[in-house]
Length: 183
Image (cartoon, rainbow, N blue to C red; front, side, top):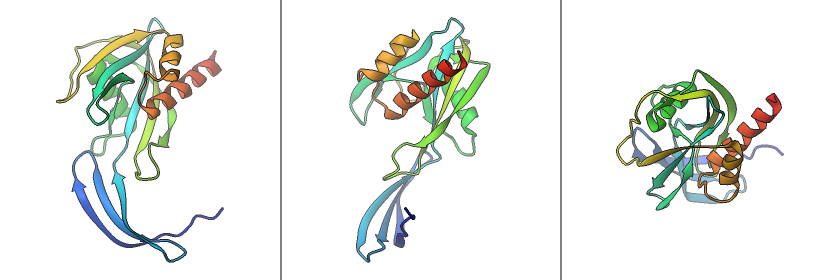
């Protein structure tokens, strides 16, 4: 299949913040039809970390999410700031949200989080030999409880609906696959 050519007839930014921009485009489709209000969320992306302790436990967090008005399991994750590299963001978010640091991070890859309406990419990592080195340093609006779970429990949390973020679920399965391949 060849990539369709959509023509942007007009574009305006409705929201511009350090975390994201919301753009409203009018686009013309190849057949001439026009979609007058096509909204696109732009961001630098975010990172997700599957962190393993020195004892081989996975670090999960329970966090309240206002947008979904839900409390669920997630992984340490966060928005890439400014010109920060994904690895630096992953290291920072693990430290801030959990108080853990790890000497080894492996890149699992990236994927678009919601390609229909966003250019945001989820960059996924496995961190090994994580140890608690400091207290949490949470942002305003973050309420996070940290837990260590076995890899079997991590798989169960991802599978049975307790983990609410699809990007986190994808990171769990990519990490488990990578760990299995390494033996």
